[in-house]
Length: 433
Image 1 (tube, helix red, strand yellow):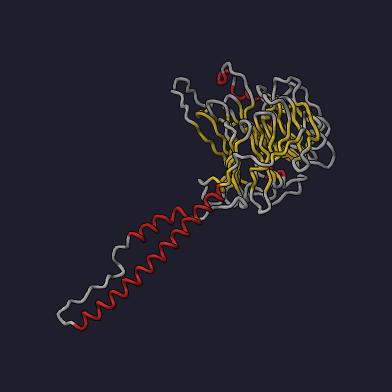
Image 2 (cartoon, rainbow, N blue to C red):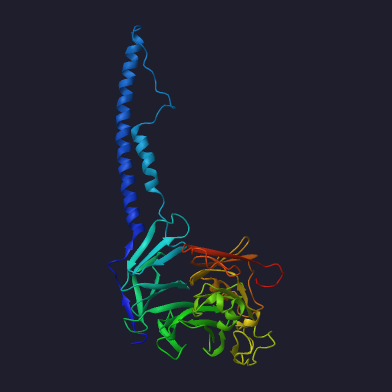
């Protein structure tokens, strides 16, 4: 049943490592205190004995004086033990502070501190099925599961994350995964098969469902949000679709295959088909990664200032021709045109697996996602917060290739590679890119 909510009051697999470490730390401190008190009593007895022996020595001139140990000599075994114990009693971070969440295919969710002591797991819990995606929105963490559900976590009264109690919202059948999550304003768009369910996390309600593709066998693969628009890619498809973030209207289609074929030629691509495997909005650009390792950056244009907005472009007239609908006045809709696209000659040998964007020197702190960082600061194109002076966009994938060089005879490097681009805001008042 779509939208059915189940409350898990106590998941027995949930572990609060902070309580565990605090208990161990308290025990160690108590043992150290007891040992110190015993040591003080022993030292007091020794001091009394030494004083009596010293008095005897003074009365007997033939008795040699005892040497007093100097402070720079080797420390006692007890002091050495204390020094060794200090690393084990280091401060345990609290999940009240910023955290990093990770999920695995076995269904475990791990929460680590992103402030310090990163290797120490603060919380963990075992879910019903594999964890596919995780996003954060307004004090809630939403996790997509392979059993057709999303889990919604919140903080407890002390402000720490509570992984033992959470809500489950049913979005589909148990054997179908919720493949993608995207934060869009105060809502979360959830990709399930060929549909997108719009979830309101605080109300635990599915408020809308839209069909991104007519075939059920064509699931939603990637989503990226900026302003009033959400770009969506479909598995095994080279066409991007733009939807309005509030009215859910289908606004634009962009096919990247003609553009890539024109720029690189069919010889570079072989017989492989072009499919979109990763998507990111950063620096006012739409970054597209393909199954061939090709990376494309397309500038996004404001609908209110673009002279061609609202016009219909016939398919085939341009590489990657697009179709546009009339926009809603007074909003920023991130349209794009492949006529202004840039293709990177540096790419990967296999599919582009992911994009990450982080501020460069002098930048602002990153939000949950690069799209969230930009979208949270933009309601209209002119109302943006202070932009970073530079942004770094990073792609990840297997192998590296320079598409300008004929290297078919060279051995293929299958190692994972990261490619980094730096975008600098060199024009005052102009967004990056």
